[in-house]
Length: 340
Image 1 (cartoon, helix red, strand yellow):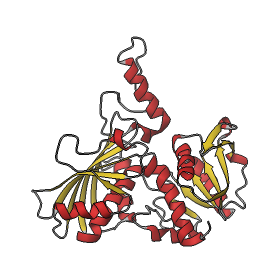
Image 2: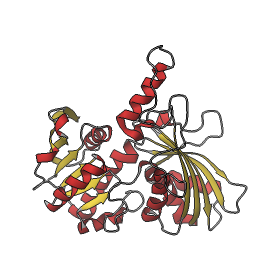
Image 3: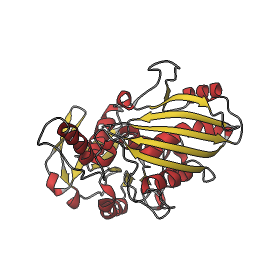
C-alpha cells in the first residue's frame, strides 16, 4: 500500500526534480498528481515512464491526498499550504515561509529525522535553504563527536538557486560576450553574473548581512544546535548547478583531521573524496545529478586550538531542495504514517 502524492509547482526546476527523485527512489506511490499555475495548465511532466499533465493548483481539492510536496514560492504557499493542511494532506514545503515558525519542524533527515514527528501542529514540514541543507549534513557527525562552537562559512552558489531566470541570464550573458548584438544587461542579478562573482544573495538587512546569510545562521541553529555560532558570506558564482562551501569549524574539543575524515566517510549522505593531489577533490560540475554531499580538502586549522577546514559540494536542486523534500516524505512514512 502506497501514498497519494501531490507535487505542486511541477513545471519548475525543483518540481521536476521532485518527480524524478520520487521515481528514482521508488517512493511508494499509489497515485500522483502534478499541479501548476493556470498559465502552465496541461504542461506535460515526466514521472518515471509515465507522462503527467499538470492540473490547476487553484481549483485542486487536497482532500484524501496524503502528502504534498510544494515548490511554488512563499506567496503561493501562503495561500495553498493551509488549504492542503486543513484538508488533511501533509505539506512538505520548499519555500522559506514556514522555516522559522516554531510550530513547524525544519528537517534534514540525516541530521534531525525525529523532528518530523512535530508535523501535526500545522500539518506542515519545512525544507531548509539549499546552502544550509548541505552544510548541516557535513556538520552533524562532527558535532556529535567534538561539539561545534563556531562555524565560518563562505558559499559559492550556482545560478540555479535563483531559478530558471537565473540560469537563462548566465547563459544569455555568456553568449553575449562572444556574439555582437546579443549582450544582456543584468535583470535577475544585481550585476553581470557571466565571468563574475556577486557577494549578494537575497535582500540586505540592517546589520549589513544578506537574508541568505541570515537564513544559514538561523536554520543551522534550529536544525542542529541553537548554541552554535555561525557567520556566513554568500556569493553567487557563474555555475549552472551545484553549490560549494568553504567551511571553517571551531570545536570545543580537539578533533584530528584523520579522525574527522573517518567520521565523515561513515556518515549518512556524505561522500568523502579527499586526495592531496591534482584533482583529488570534488567541484560543482561533478556533483550534478548525484544524491551525495561531497566533502574534500579536510585539514587542520593551525590558527585555532580545535579547528578544521573543509570543502563541501552538493547538487542544490537535489540535496538542497527536491531530494531533501523526498527524504522528508520517506522519513515521515517510516516514522509516522507507516505505509508501503
